[in-house]
Image (tube, rainbow, N blue to C red; front, side, top):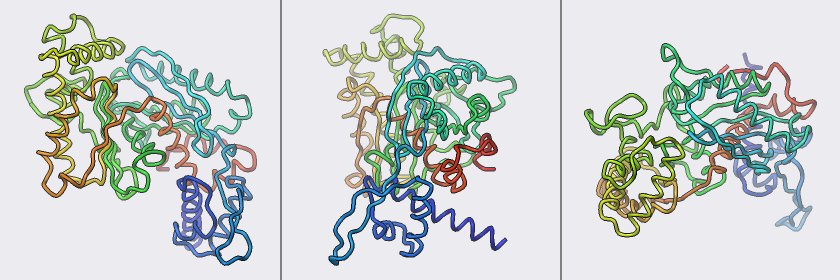
Length: 424
């Protein structure tokens, strides 16, 4: 037992060193790693030597020593050590990002998809597109593929890799969760992690964006669904079964509009792009017809164009969208007290229409101490950022496993590591 405990501590320290360099946004000296991790200089020297031997780290430039002595060597992530693929699954599109070990995106592929699909059909399609993305990079990349991260909208248990419900999947008999991660792992013969898409965006913001070096952040996604990714104490917060942050399915009217999740009166049924487009149809501002994924995007843009041109009814729809979402954001800020709220607001064309009402409602709903201290940043990311977040999750899992790092350094990924559940 003592040996196991010592081994776990050693693995934790290895993760701290590797991850500090990864998130350092540039090469770090051993002294800087000591300062970031709190580890002793002898410990950091031993751990960095181990990572240099595996080639997960490489020596970069040397910088002058403050004492005028020997120049300090900087350490950096070796981008070619391993490769990962991040995937974002939407109702109408799959976005794939091939990323190196340093998190740099080397290739992005977008393909059209029609949903909902059965799990088997989605797995076949994802496997085919992932292999196509890898084929453009050559066999060496495929051989050193460390894993795949898949961002899915809906209710996702990331620890078990199961999807309880998603608009991209057809309902299963008996409403059993879909074991998407295991099915993809079997199809690709590499570890696959599946995560809620809003959590993936939160991770991307924490690693590469505006949430860097912040401990408590709320990332809200406003697309054809409504999502929330939470960073608490520097870590993604998933809650029981990985289902925390489902703000879109908080009920605001028990007798209200039908939601795709099967409930009535969910917030998502009032503020998402689908909801806004539907309200535009009901107001006679948009032609009637089925709103599939592509039609939603074009209808939302058409309604925004009318509102910007001065149509009062169209403007009212967007202002209501902003007010309802702002009220919820203010309540959420009062409840969890984040340092920053980031809203990925979808197409920039509509932001001037809903954002003023959103900010006003958020301020009114927030408790007084938060009104001037919790900033709201509205951005309009492309799909590549979400896929990069999916890739980042795989890299984080790699950083956490000393055995995998050392296995890759020898001969790639051992077969016994494939298919393990993250909680195994």
